Image (tube, rainbow, N blue to C red):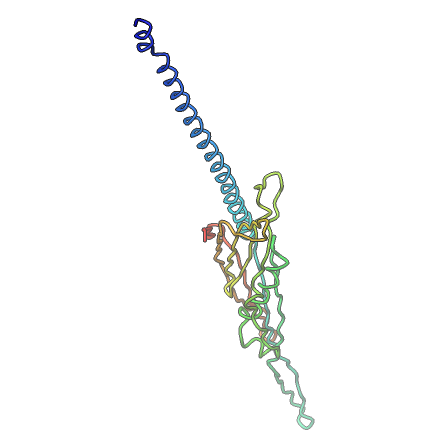
Length: 251
C-alpha cells in the first residue's frame, strides 16, 4: 500500500509534462520572433530600396535645377533706317537743290547665345522664340523678310534625358532616373523626373514622379542710336532662370 501511495504522490510525470509545455512555449516564442525578424528584415530592405529611389530622383532634380538656373540667354535684332541725300543743279540757273530719298530699311538679327549646360538644345529653341516673338512685327516687313514661325509642341521639349553626375557623389540609382525638359513661349522651363525599373517580365514601373518648374525672367530693351540719316534701333532680350523661383514638387 505504501508503494502505491508513493507512486500516486509522485510528481515526476507532472514535472515532465510541465517541462514539455515550457519547451513548446519557448519553441513557439522563438518561431514568432524568427518570423518577426524575417518580416522586419524584408521591410527594412524594401524601405532602404525605396529611400534610395527617392534620393536618386531628388538628387537628379536638384542637379538639373542648379544647371538650368546657371544658364542665361542673350539675343538682339537691329533695324537700320537709312536716308540717301543727293543734289541736283539746274542747267539754266545753276541753282543747286538737295533731295532726300528714303527711308530704306535693313534688318539684322543676332539670334543670340545661351550660356549653360543645356546649350545644344535650349539655345536653338530660345533663338526660335526670340526671332518669332521678340522682334517687332513691322521690322520684318520693313526689312523685307518673312517672320519665322515660333517653335511649338515637340520642338520645345526634349525627352528621354538622363542625368550625368560625378560617380563619387552620385546616388546608386541615379542612372535609372529619366526626365524630360519643356520650355513654353515665355521661356518658362518645366522638367519632369521619374525612376524607372524593369522586372524580369519586362514590366516597367515609375517611382517618385517629380516636377521641377523654373519661371523665366525676361528683360527686353530697345535703344536707338546713330545719326538721323542712319538711325539704328536695337531690340535686345536677356533671359535668366533665377534659383529662388525654382520649385521642386512630387507629382
